[in-house]
Amino acid sequence: MVAHSVLITGCNRGLGLEMVKQLTRGNNTPELVIATCRKPKEAQKLNEVAASNKCVKVIQLDVGDESSYSGLVSHVGELVGAHGLNLLINNAGVSPKSTRINMVKWRQMTDTFAVNVVAPLMLTKVALNAVTKSLSVDLREHNILVASFHPGWVQTDMGGKNAPLRPTESISQLLTQLAQLSELHHGQFLQYDGEQLPW
Ligand SMILES: NC(=O)c1ccc[n+]([C@@H]2O[C@H](COP(=O)([O-])OP(=O)(O)OC[C@H]3O[C@@H](n4cnc5c(N)ncnc54)[C@H](OP(=O)(O)O)[C@@H]3O)[C@@H](O)[C@H]2O)c1
Image 1 (cartoon, protein in one colour):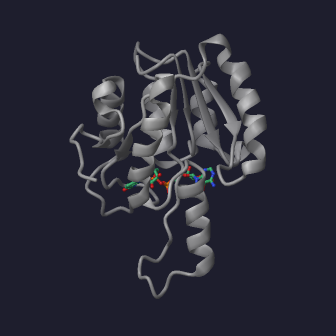
Image 2: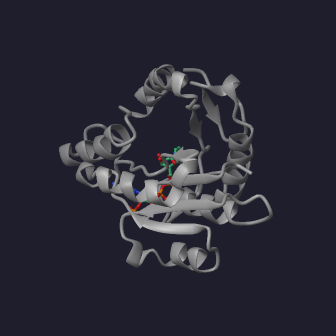
């Protein structure tokens, strides 16, 4: 089992949806999978998974909406009860449509920064690693393991169809790594297949 309870952000499509699907298959499913997304009413595929798996609770969360955080904490607290939340996967992310620096609009960059950076306490993907390291120091005394995972280049809306990996391949290996996470990986940057990546 990966954990007793798991919360994943951005579960309506892409890698988040694939995580929910795989976590609910087989005998080692968590007792509770809290699958968040921005628009639950429109999350048809996620709602289908939830309808056939009682362990999946779909709740609304826009990670860029800081004002919703306290309500979220209360809601999650009620769901997990005395066990607490065992695993938080900050999956939700955006990528500016244009990667050419002279074509990226100000608004695209600030939106990206808000979702990828501020929401899960990171800066850019580069600074994410530094923040992971910093959080790992701060949270060590609370016995909370922190690691960053690179899913590989995957065929999702973000990764595009030329990516070499399918979501099933990336996520099955990534969940295997998560299940084996230990103090040894605390503060590290890891690839979906367990390879440790350089800072
Ligand atoms: N695919 C790759 O090759 C690749 C490579 C490296 C890292 N990653 C990382 O893996 C993660 C998942 O990527 P993906 O490929 O699954 O991307 P994706 O297919 O584009 O899906 C992105 C997900 O994030 C959600 N999201 C975006 N902004 C949000 C917000 N403000 N609040 C809540 N949810 C929000 C989206 O919800 P909506 O439908 O509401 O927009 C969607 O569910 C991201 O953090 C990405 O940076 C992916």
